Amino acid sequence: MRQCLTAAVERDVVWEGEFATEPWEAAWASEAIFFVRLLSLESAPAGAGPLLEARVQISPDGTLWCDEGSTATLEAGQSLVAIRARHFGGWLRLCGAVAPGARLRVIAYLNLKE
Image 1 (cartoon, rainbow, N blue to C red):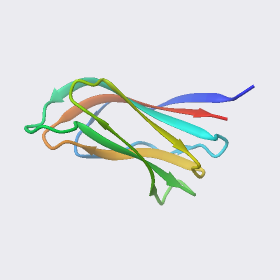
Image 2: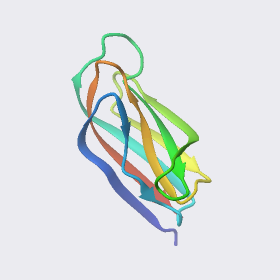
Image 3: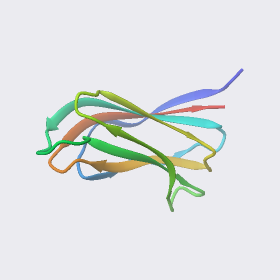
């Protein structure tokens, strides 16, 4: 039987500018999916383009980070985006940037499977 865990790594928080979620130790898992759910758009950006650009980061120890390579964007009109990651080390987090002038209220989940 496969093991599975879903953690809310950010719950009902406002993201604006640069962001990074809390690190999560995931060495036991072989695959991961981050979900970002838009609860509300508290302020909208002036121009067109994505509201959010996010990327997965990995770490051997939870303190020093590098990009894993998986990315996603949340466009206007979307309420949920997912980012898959495989072949990661011991620690995972999600980071990125919100469009200038935008404020997003979000929930971010991390789903791990072995």
